Image 1 (cartoon, rainbow, N blue to C red):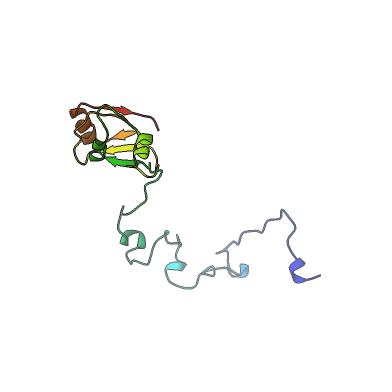
Image 2 (cartoon, one colour):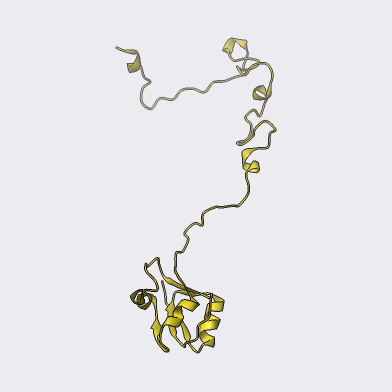
Length: 149
């Protein structure tokens, strides 16, 4: 028999140490915590993050900066001025933009932003429009159709 073979029986539980029950118990008076100091007092453990009165790390670091957006929606983005290449009354969607070479990669549903001017009336199909993009397309005589993702 070896030392590593001497293990408790499966399912057995070790009794908890009863401290502060007199000197004959072996853990009387100071209960093995020493004479003085913060770690010997009642209510002993300090709260998580406590650094002895120093400003703790969770209060030292800046708040709410550069956290990643959870479940961020990715869009294929295009500006209004890129739509002026199309002929009037053309249906513009993600596939027609890729065929025309304006958009090179499908990064998700199409979103139209309002930078620039559009001078031709177009039927634009996209998942999302900014408010200025929608105003500019409709002011040129076109229509904005929301397509589900």
